[in-house]
Length: 259
Image (cartoon, rainbow, N blue to C red; front, side, top):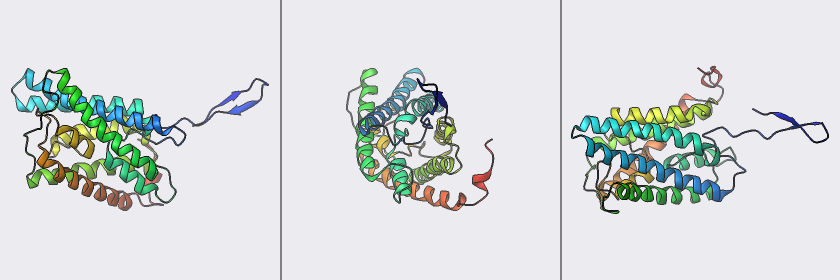
């Protein structure tokens, strides 16, 4: 949406369009985008790890621990997307960044290869920093490799499903011009996926790496990281394929009114 204002001479001038949360504004300096991705991913991992530690200190009920962890993640992620979406697109996730680059590689809207090459390292550094920060806040060792093995096949399948659903949601919203709903929709999906996937929905290579640095409730053993990242990338490909199939150009999906 655009607005008009009057200049000093009294003639109307058009204001620049305001970016929609969830998109990647083209005129934002790359250093600001990288900082937003680093800070946002760090904050997200701090929320995930910190709430997991807090939950285990408050109760021994594993179901209640997961509920606390998932609710904190939902609220934290929604706030971060709302705050940083207009700056960097609020990816906080290499799978999302690479998927956006892939869809934009022929000149469409989205990150360039150069931007993706900056985003991904920023996200990984941010994820590690967030895990270390959460451990520091709760008096845990700053870096202690997780012993939580997550290499079972059914957990890997859960990550394929979680990541595919996330990519389908984000790019489906983009195809139907509903990215304004991204803060609520993405946070809600992740909260639901905590419970309906066997892996509790990491769905994020950077977050997976960061969570290996903490031997707490949300951790993942370093030996399980490569498998998780591999299937997350597979899930991203599956998600993009579903977007192409379901939201075909000229189909009815893009013509439906917003609910």
